Length: 166
Image (cartoon, rainbow, N blue to C red; front, side, top):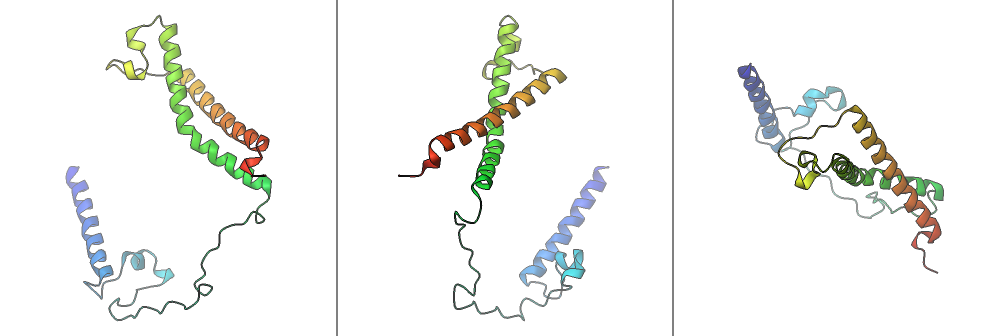
């Protein structure tokens, strides 16, 4: 079994090493891995040593430089929804961590301060497992706390007009 894994890894390394050499121009006639994997989207690429780079366009408009979004491009509700989603997803790791800590402290206190149930920084080497009901509550509290965080941000933004100056 390990010989098969080593052989497969060696073949992949050889294949990608040869195609990397072809992409750098060391082996000009060798097709790249994109040409092999996607022949319908371009076939074999030309020799990189024979092609000349295209001259850059003279004006910024010709280069298709992206412009920043303006406030008029999206309605206010869409910006609020986007911000709420970002805050909801961004707060998930923090609310998960604090939920686990709160759950561990609750279990430690309700278990009569048993040293084997101590919360994370003070835990012994033994691992504490969570049953199905515990996991359900932890995930539910985490998702609810993240939703409340996003709702609090929205309400504070409405109350304080999203930081607009007078």
